[in-house]
Image 1 (tube, rainbow, N blue to C red):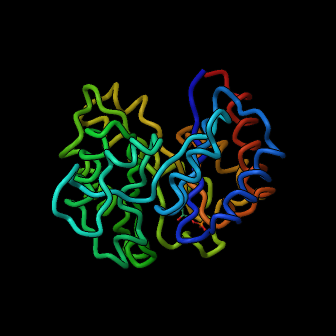
Image 2 (cartoon, rainbow, N blue to C red):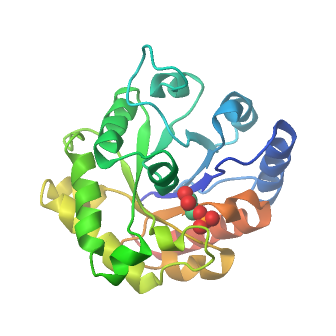
Length: 258
Ligand code: 13P
């Protein structure tokens, strides 16, 4: 059966105590994970080592929210993807819109970061998505194509593994998720764009959705054929909600025969 991913992006939240409490609450509600749905938690940088020891043996995997586009060197304040790998991360979120907006990250940097992450042995979760204004002006596909093409200028489809996250900026943290129809349309567009480079890579490339996913809308979003999981922000900070979303994804994938 095909694999699915549920990724919790904890953003700049948490503390030593609250991280442990949240993880315990998730584990109490979901003691065993589905072999078909990977659960990945992405805490803030200072807590990666803490979380690595807490998730050991649980099956829960670890990701970071960002990484440098360099593996080593005189880059004050940066974090190498190699260091994240050493600490136990398997994934790293690249090009999140909050980094594009607040840190001025651009498409080219995102591509270089994705490549550095891959070279360090991490799976990059590459975020793409349009603003409300771009959608209103019917520029969504132009924007998604530009962001995707920049990343795929660096990725070697013959052997690299990546996850694409479609995160429309207007749906992030607003409580208004994209409709399942919009999500399906854009995921299919992203897959077809990558298929122009490498059809077999595109067919197996996971595309997950992020933007106000909640227990109440998860099932309808996950039921779309090109949705391979979710990237969850605020609902990932609540164990009950996050586990409900996880279980909804498990149910969807079990009902599919692929
Ligand atoms: P919300 O789930 O809070 O909308 O955040 C989504 C997100 O940015 C995940 O990376």
